[in-house]
Amino acid sequence: MAKGVALPGVDWKSLFIPVYLPSFLLSFGSGLLVPTLPLYARSFELSYSLISLVVASRAIGTILADIPAGFLVARYGRRSIMLIGVGTVSLSVLGSGFAGSAVELILYQGIAGIGSALWGISRHTYIMDLIQVHERGRALSIFGGIARFGTLMGPAAGGIIGQRWGLSTPFFFEAAIAALVLGLVAGFIPEPVSETPYKESGHVSRRAHVKSILQTYRQIFATAGVAYVCVQMARSGRYLITPLYGAAVLGLDVESIGLIISLSALVDLTLFPVAGQIMDRHGRKYAMIPAFTIMGIGFALIPFTGSFFGLLAAQGVIGLGNGLGSGTMMTLGSDLAPAQGRGEFLGVWRFIGDVGGASGPLAFGRLSDLFGLASGAFLLAGVSVFSSIVFLFFVKETRQHIPP
Image (cartoon, rainbow, N blue to C red; front, side):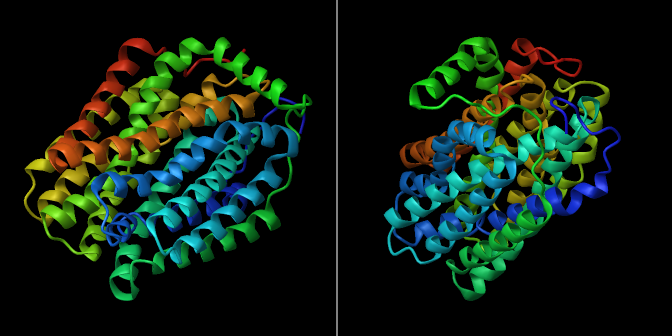
């Protein structure tokens, strides 16, 4: 495919096996751990701060690999990096299931995060080669919806598996699923030629290139980037507060917690087509601002819940907001990315988001150790609403934006 040219009239069905199915399977696999990972870490008799570090370790690994992943994609191609990334996830998650200490668990989850970064950047760049700008919101909201579909099924299944066969068992299921995805990527994804590979070599040249991106787009990173950090803080924090609050405060078992998360994801899932239509027809901000405001309201309700159904209602509100925000951050990053150096820019963009993804659980855990789980819920509510304020007043609408 010629440089900078998207395929006209993309056949969405043709993307199912090479792109959408692997994305669903990986999100389902990671969803298995949503209700079980915090409780598995808790079995090592850790504080909330250390439990949050275990949960955040995958995001920390992703942070370390985001920017290098952009260069690796540009140099070695999307397909090769996808294969390496998925293979890394499979092996490291398998190791997590055999972890004998919290240190081992943190290490393996961090390596899984590195694999996730390689997969995420290569997949994002690959789909941008195939989709025209006017279809971008719908295409990337589908990605968000697929991830949510995995989240719908994964936590309920993970809760049942963890309850019946032990909290380490979901790791083995995720490892097997990632191995299946490896086969799909190897068999069905070709290597598109969309831009000239990054030819410079050496640590100094790569560092200089990243510095150039940061300088050129510093205003974007200082506004949209800050809001992106807050969004990801809230999104990652919800996977920690629900299992811990449900188990420690409400006394729920892991199966009930998994059911709550999956039912919330069902609400979430119904809205990703709406999010795509809103972004493409009206603008990105029309989806982002109400989405993250509603999420903030849901977090603020959690400390006032006292039963399974109360926590389910609060999670439903969070799912409503998150569903409306489906694909918004990927779409915004795609709008802002330049035609040349797209992989490197997206590496920086994902790095920014993953800083939020890692800092959300860490900040939540520390605050909960000091002041209780309710304070952590209010923290997540605050960062959600703050992101909406930044998007409203400091980020320009990008629906009609043509990258330089």
